[in-house]
Each structure stands twice: as structure tokens, then as C-alpha cells.
Amino acid sequence: MRLQKRTYALPPETVREFDEVVQPGRRSSVLANLMQTWLDERRRARLREAVIEGCQDMADTYLEIERDYHPLEEEVQRVLDAEG
Image 1 (cartoon, rainbow, N blue to C red):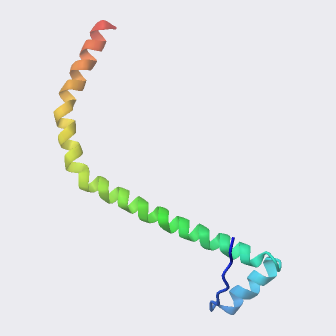
Image 2 (tube, rainbow, N blue to C red):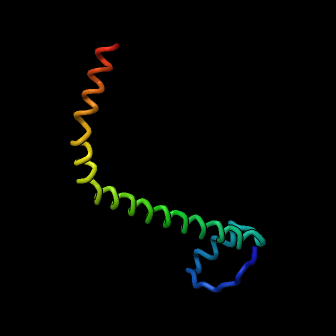
Image 3 (spheres, rainbow, N blue to C red):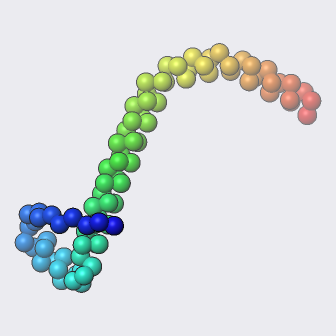
């Protein structure tokens, strides 16, 4: 994997604690993992919002389909109950 060097401004206390906790030589990989985790969570949140919005947009359609097919489901169930 090709690495890129970047410069970011961070609060001094955060940097001090991070340097105390994470060994030299591991800091870049820890930061890369944290950034990737944050990006993945953000991507999942956007996808979740899109799915919810899509379901809300389709709610009327789903209800219409349910109204159309519910009587058929009841009829099938009656036949199955009669055979059982």
C-alpha cells in the first residue's frame, strides 16, 4: 500500500495522550484504522438514511400491494387449514 504524508492540526492534549498510548511505528496505522472506521460508519449511516427514505417513499405502494394480495393470502390459508 502506498502511503501519503499529511499535516493536520490537532489539540495538543489529544496529541500528547495519543503519543503516550500508541507506540512510535504504530501511530500511522492506528490513525489509518481510525479514519477508515469513521469513513465506514459515515458511509453506513448515509446508506441507512437512503434505505429509510426509500422505504418511506414506497410506503403507499407497499400498502397498495398488500391490499391487492391480502385476500389471496387469506384464501390460500383457508385452503391449507381445510386440508390440514
